[in-house]
Amino acid sequence: MKSRRLVAGNWKMNLNRQEAQALVSEIAGMLQDETMDDFPVVIFPPFPYLILLANQVRDAARIRFGAQNCSAEQSGAFTGEVSAAMLSSCGVNYVLAGHSERRALFGETDAIVAKKVQRILEEGMTPVFCCGETLDQRNGNLHFDAVKRQVETVIATLSNDHFKKLVIAYEPVWAIGSGLTATASQAAEMHTFIRSILTERQGEAADRIPLLYGGSCNENNAKELFAAANVDGGLIGGASLKSRSFVSIVKSFS
Ligand code: PGA
Image (tube, rainbow, N blue to C red; front, top):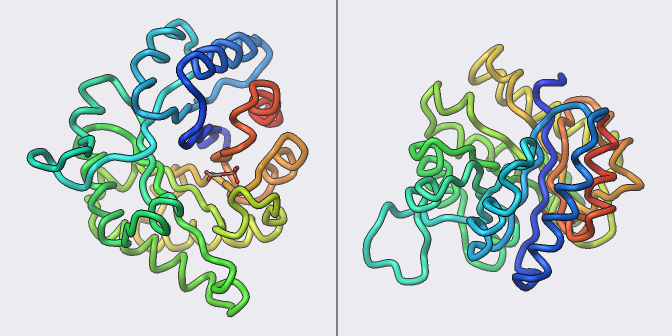
């Protein structure tokens, strides 16, 4: 479905300020292509660059900005944390929640991720909620169970209104930064499974939720992955750090 399309770049903890500013200018310039279909392109830079970059490319209509994380708490004595309300007050549109690096390296449980998604929605922003199985889970044929648990924990806490605003990224952990990509049929199979979980909860409203694929998606495999059933775009890590690669992934949709 065309209206679900979205491509996002997750810069992770990379680039200094000058590099970040140069990259966003290049991307904005290359995206000024009138022939391209119109769908949002979201960039997730590190926190300190969010406002700076948003001001820098204010006229680039299709570029939105998102934060890579936010606190599960509302406010108070949580040194080093950034709240959803702060991000929203700075004009941030999207926030990642549940990225596998946050889960594996920073101990984020499904319950914490669900709380973050809730905070992001309460502040009127769009959560890009990430789910995906580990290699052990896939090898043990537990990948559907793992993803189902992650998705159901999050959607169980949402009102019907909030549910409709979700964006979900399926990112198999074994594919992230590894050069191993899910095949188009593996992606289609899991995305169709996720869509069925959403439909069970909310009927037709589930059809509007964008399901992105992430995990070593690049300019060579994006076209095939994006053509797979229920794959509505991508969450791009490594390849989003090079303007040419990232824009060519975006263009593989047009
Ligand atoms: P990758 O990362 O494209 O470098 O595999 C994707 C992600 O972590 O979101």
